[in-house]
Image (cartoon, rainbow, N blue to C red; front, top):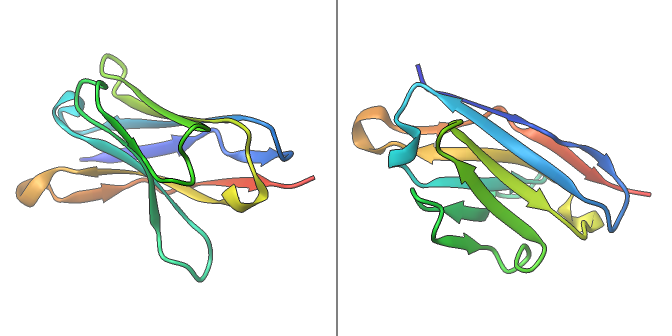
Length: 118
C-alpha cells in the first residue's frame, strides 16, 4: 500500500522558516520523481517544486525560487521542502505527490497546513 505522510507544517511569522517532510512507503522511492504542491481554498493546486530520482535535478515554481529547497533522502524514503523567507502568500496546505505510472497510479499525501502570519 502506497503511503505519503507529510509533517512539519505550522504557524510561522513572515520571514521565518519551516521544513516540511514527506515520509513514504509502499513503492521503490528511489525510482520516482517527487513533487511538492500547495493549495489555497478556492484555488487550484499548484506545483511548488520537483526533484528527480537522484536529487541532481530540481525545479521550482517562480514563487519558490531562491527561497525554497527541495531535497530527498533515498535511504529514508523521504522528501523534504525547506522553506525560508516565508511570506503571507505562502499560506496554504502543502502536499507531496508521487506519480507511479499507469500501474500504481498517482498518489498524494494528506497535506500539512502552513500558515504565515504575525
